[in-house]
Amino acid sequence: MLVILVAHHAEGNALIEHYNLNQDHQDKSGRRFLGEEVCLRIIGQGETNARQSVIKELAAVSHPGNLHWLNIGIAGSAEWRAGSLVEVKQISSDQTTDNALSFTLHQRKLAPPSVCLSVAEPTETYPQSGVVDMESYAIAAELSARSMLNSLTVVKLVADGPENPLNTLNLSDIRRLLDRSRIHIIGISDKLKRLIATSF
Image (tube, rainbow, N blue to C red; front, side, top):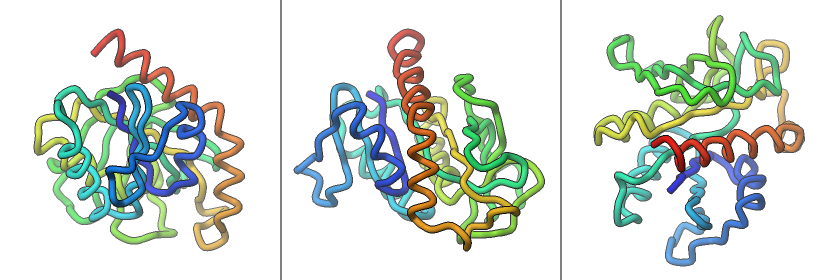
């Protein structure tokens, strides 16, 4: 099964509609949606929510070893312009300076590759290369601890950067960006589903 993790409902709307997902009424949070071989969970913002959501999802299924994970959502970048979709190849955290604690992901070739820095708080300080988010490192850490890192794919949609910093964006701006990228987001998810069916 493909488990899609998004921080906010707006990031998951297109996929909920595309896969005709229904709210899981057994999940008290109201943030889990189910369909045929697809589950989408709205995890909320930040490391703690990301970790807890992975743990909850692992507890909710009978065979967690059969899960394949897709974290998709918005990110900031100085390198990539707004609207760019990238597939993360390596994740590090601003909470550690030890490069050995970064995570290298198996590449599915769904989008141009990029590195990702996960930060603890929203930031308008962008590294020269790659993208910045708040959840992917925590997701990777939880899966790596269970020897499941190879089942994780991370795709980010660039929303902000030095020319359009985070404090200038509102929810309407982000929704418009997601709407413009809808076809590409669905296409990436569909391609990953096909890869899961044929290659994993």
